[in-house]
Amino acid sequence: MVIISDIGLPQGLSLRDPLQTKLGRDIISNSIDLIEEVGFEQFTFKKLAKCMGSNETSLYRYFENKHSLLLYLVVWYWNWVSYLIDYNTKNIEDPHRKLDIIIENFVDATKENPSVHFVNETKLHHIIISESAKAYHTKKVDYENTEGFFMSYKALIQKVADVITEINPRFPYPNSFATNLFEMANNQIFFAQHLPRLTNIKVQGEDFSEVVDLLKFYKHKMLG
Amino acid sequence: MVIISDIGLPQGLSLRDPLQTKLGRDIISNSIDLIEEVGFEQFTFKKLAKCMGSNETSLYRYFENKHSLLLYLVVWYWNWVSYLIDYNTKNIEDPHRKLDIIIENFVDATKENPSVHFVNETKLHHIIISESAKAYHTKKVDYENTEGFFMSYKALIQKVADVITEINPRFPYPNSFATNLFEMANNQIFFAQHLPRLTNIKVQGEDFSEVVDLLKFYKHKMLG
DNA sequence: GCAAAAATATTAGTAATACTAATATTTTGT
DNA sequence: ACAAAATATTAGTATTACTAATATTTTTGC
Image (cartoon, rainbow over all chains, first blue to last red; front, side, top):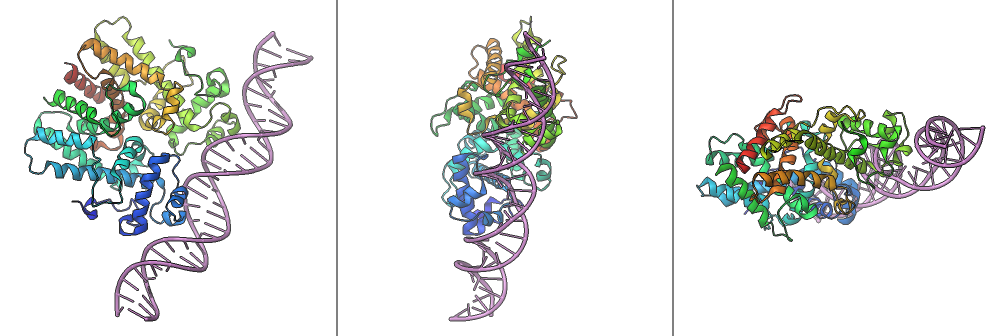
């Protein structure tokens, strides 16, 4: 069971901690609903305020702009996947088994987390698939990196890279392969849903099992 | 040597063919400069008009909005990589050698093309690396797919998938692997430049040779 | 229970963005 | 040289992305 403070979002991403107040938690919760519904481009603080019965100005006291809010959600997701991996690989010694569990959590990090009731993880997963690339493909990325906003992603990737190195200490690209597995999980789902000629996998509803098979095939070929 | 009509951009992406007029070609040329300089979020038609000595309204007669223009550039790139692959694999029989050439063109599609003088391929490549995901991660993707705007990407991927199948007719994921190689090429360069802890490769200036090595390592592991 | 402080809401604004319409001027093709 | 096409100009609108000032409500410490 996660408690909110375990999530460990970096200072500075928000102007004040949204987890500490009702309004803050409402912003997180409703922004996930609204971004998923209208897409990040059409998402505005005015619309968000309206649909949660609040005021645009109030939201600006929590986040500088919608980009910061998106990055906050993406960082939340990275932390959450990290937590799931820690939880689900606890007491497991075999690094092969560990990487299998990691792959399953990369693809299917959608089991509801009962202690963070205001985050709909399934919708957040949809946002990650469709919008997360926008969180770092900006001119601000270098500055935001110096502010530590990508530490969660780096920590997640390093954790996976360490397991890869455990499996094969001579594998030359553990971090690249870890990043690639994570990004591929999201990309292949997006392509299967929208541009299916770009993949050989099929997804139906929330059944992403073919993506798990694909990633495990990669694991087998790359690491034996 | 390419002639412009070979590029074959889909109808409907632009309101009128920018290749047929000086203004149209100026839009392509200057938008590449400006998007690369300020990033897609900060890019506007007003700024573009100003920096090319034209008028905002005139630009709207060529493209509905900046998203269409970005997609046009991305489609251009897909076509151009396809062309390079055809050109460079002509008369080569060995599918292994073909895939090596494909990988080199995925990574390093930056050799200047003398017949399309108004397109700076190096800058276009930077845009692809930083902005191309935004061209399809939108709520419009399904509609734009029905309009045929992604045919170039599908054709490129199918071409590569066919080579993969030639190498190993039993390989179960030729399209996914082709897509993954292409996306990985761009992603790993971006990460090496901005979030280097996510990769094991290094890029210096326009030398992306370590990315070529990485992709060839994948090829070797996945296809033998 | 009350005052101070913190949080939230309201109102009112600005500059920039993302367009569209109407008309005038310039360029081009024959 | 003339008609047609392309481009430019001017002038607008609605929305976005904010900020400032002030008012109201809620929380908390004593």
